[in-house]
Image 1 (cartoon, rainbow, N blue to C red):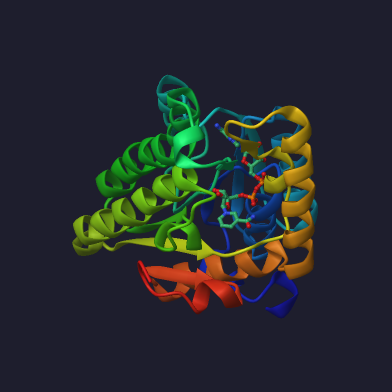
Image 2: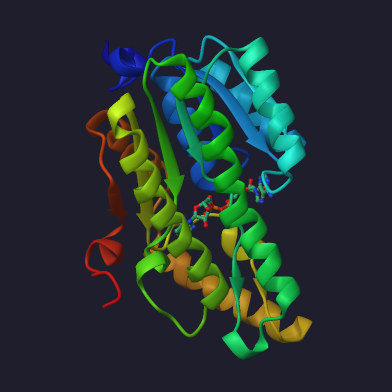
Length: 264
Ligand code: NAI
């Protein structure tokens, strides 16, 4: 019923795993599924934050919820997580690969180390999640859904975010490829592409090739911009649940993202 959230019928009792669940869009998504009565696995490299999201999820309506401290870019840790989840909680019905980090700075100023950091989390983290949990879904043979948080940056070239945008463009493409591969098995794959959303990503984002003072100044400026747009993560969470229900392929969220065309 309505008291259990708008999507209770679809998600009640289902097992939903969300990465990057300690903060922002991931946390709001965990809460939205919890409200719909899903069992929630909240994954984040921030152990305390993951535990807090799990605790809140139970209060909101998840019959069961667990916090898991895992770095999504660590393949071995992700393999262990996939095994542990399958053994202890069951096969995941909905996987949300959402963990991500920001990096600004011009292409020429971005070092290989910075490129690697961004690709390790934003791209490889999604690859590990898709392969490990996608295999479990396919083997079980009862369908499922994978949602990957890409970004409007995936199809909007910019001078300010070359590494981040490249990582998100890759996430968008791998989502489409996996969608084609799994369609016959009743497993849906969606790529969510938000524009500016008011979260912590601006305060944790790094800037390539600039000194600390300038980095602080630019972070403040970016945070102000995100605050001005003031698009709440809860609305992205709504879009994620809707994408699963409607099995949507690519979902632009926020007004500026909806206005973009691929490689415009
Ligand atoms: P956030 O910074 O509030 O949340 C990101 C979460 O991911 C944090 O809890 C962080 O600890 C976790 N995380 C980071 N690296 C991790 C790793 N290696 N392993 C496990 N957890 C890790 O940021 P936000 O905005 O909620 O970001 C969520 C996703 O949405 C990201 O993929 C981001 O790129 C994407 N996105 C955000 C937009 C925005 O304007 N905020 C716009 C478009 C996409």
